[in-house]
Length: 227
Image (tube, rainbow, N blue to C red; front, side, top):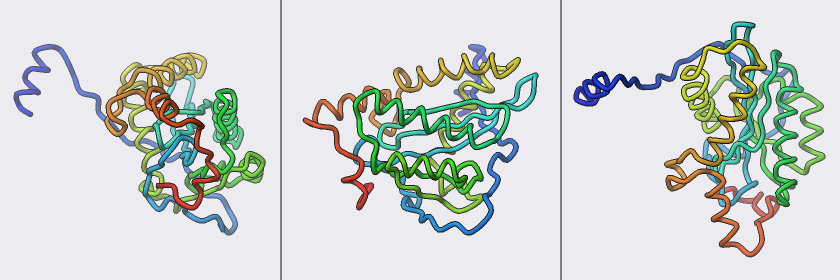
């Protein structure tokens, strides 16, 4: 590592550092009866069998901006995202709606997909719960304040903030950031190579799956086993 450090310094290069910041998860009130169907095993045999959702924060000159993402575990593809200056339910709900629309637009059925999140108030809100039910999705939640229970989403947030927010900032406002996030998600889905899926981009990985299956696997058939 000393040799790498010396060569990078000579070339004017620096590594991206992942850092921690303020808390974005506020636990919902009342009893939580939804099970943890994932139990820290973030694997899926096909697209739209398991999605993970989470919220992170971004600093701008105009104040904090919050980003919600929905990720398909099979391919690591970001299927939905949204930015907001508040942590209200609409932030998470809009990201979910984008995910549902994206898959529907591509002709894929998401009924039965397991939607995993933490117990943040946005995800246990009545409107969010109702939308999951309308879409035929199955809600799964991890424990409060434990990042390992939603580790894949947390890992994406860490990459997002290291590769875009801190590396390309500072940011003026949410308007400035929205354009950058749209470009980042496009790059992440179409061109970024992922070691967990064979060093190919998420959409290429999904395309390869569909080419080798005469019909896309339905999420509902996978409910008894995500893995």
